[in-house]
Length: 201
Image: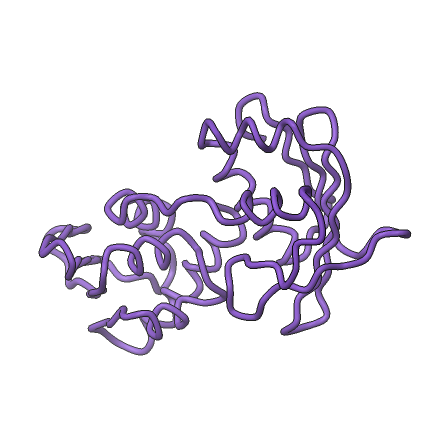
């Protein structure tokens, strides 16, 4: 739940359900998107084209319930592969609104990196230090001062996306202009940390 906005998932949610809920929580933090979310009524079902995952979003009484599967009577809209999240079609105004809510604005790359560090520092295998270099702004931030730093370089938007859990994997960021300097073991830990951001936010 985010403030007065009800965003609920089933007791044992699937990865798709968790990531959809994370996107909804991010949208609920943006005033105009919060107003959009709380004003919706109806049901939208979605399905991945990369695996067998499906999910249904039920909007009512100013909030949304998200669970796996496709409710009876609903027709699942395909998600565009490797998007986060584009719908293959938007047959009505509700589907268009859902697509908007599933793609909230990116946070500032510094804020995203700071939250990523705060959520993962001290975790087993996670780097003791993290140096983030924004190539478009020619600025950097350093976490864990004095410790050996794992380095992540890239454009502002790509860094913000990677650290806020956008994309299916941290490895996806490497295809969007992000580069890393460090060990394979730490790269594996970064992938795990990305999933933590993606599925819990």
